[in-house]
Amino acid sequence: MRKGECALCGAPASRFLRVCRECILNRWDEAERYVREAHARARRELGLPPEPPRRGKRCGACVNDCRIPEGGRGFCGVVVNREGTLVREHRGRAYLDPHPTNCVGAWVCPGATSAGYPRYTDTKGPELGRYNLAVFYAGCSHHCFFCQNHEHWVEEGRLDAERLARRARDEDVTCVCFFGGDPTPHHDQVLELGERWEELGVRVCLETNGSLDPRIMRRIAEVCYESGGGFNMDVKAYDPRIYRALTGSDPENTFKNLELIGEEFHRDDPPILRPSVLIVPGYVTPEEVEKIAEFLASVNESVPLKLLQHVPHYHSLDLGYTPVRVMRECERAARRHLERVEACIYRPV
Image 1 (spheres, rainbow, N blue to C red):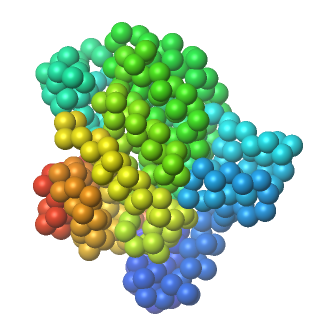
Image 2 (image 1 turned 60 degrees about the vertical axis):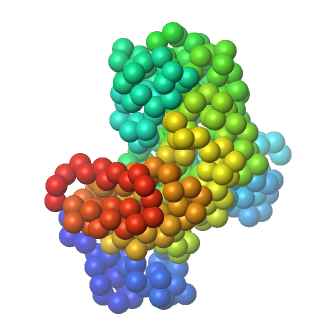
């Protein structure tokens, strides 16, 4: 699919956003309107609030800080105001994913390597014949137009903590990974199940955008740290304007939580913090990656960073695969600051 043109300067741009990276950075006062309109249009198609609601009962669990009106939903689509009470609808599905999984953090985790042996795994190498209980949640505190799992918005299955606990208790299950969507709107269930990690005999991991309130994140970090699990934290961008264009949200809590987890819960083997960056063509550049890597290095130079090639999906079909040349440039930029960097390339284009 042919790329669109920037409505402000005519340069190549996402058909969805209608503005290019340079105009987002240098003409934000004009570009912001296109960004807001694009995300609002996509969210209305899903029956979701175009932006975080600002009049109603305060949720406050994530960076969006929604005030949800009676009968309304939060930006995430999960939290509902029912007669003045906020209710979290735990929708999604759960399944057993055999080790080694395709998890973003698998390259440094006990389930796929010898990391943490013998404290957090009794196996040298992949835990063959054993499983990760993958808990795939509906809803998200962000709305990335390139989301690889965008079907999460329409998941209708109900997830019950006790049923999940019974599945996790199986002796062949060695870890539970909460992802989606994002586990942020479901933090109460994550804690309800995660705090039982010792009884269940599992490691606890999250794949998240990091937007959770740091006070809640600290409690989950304690569980992940003690159990031998970790955070596969997807860092969308460094510049707040690029971040908002990509996600419809804000990076403030993400960077606070990277610091919180990396400094207060640092662990070398296995590393608790396993960030990744999706290289969205035209928007996430080597310069953007270098700024992220520099920030991570200020937390700890040993933080492992994974760079992911963009795969055309959802509203980003016109952007194509990230060129290998760009992936390698991003890899070199990150290596200027971090000791462990890996570029994940699906198609050599």
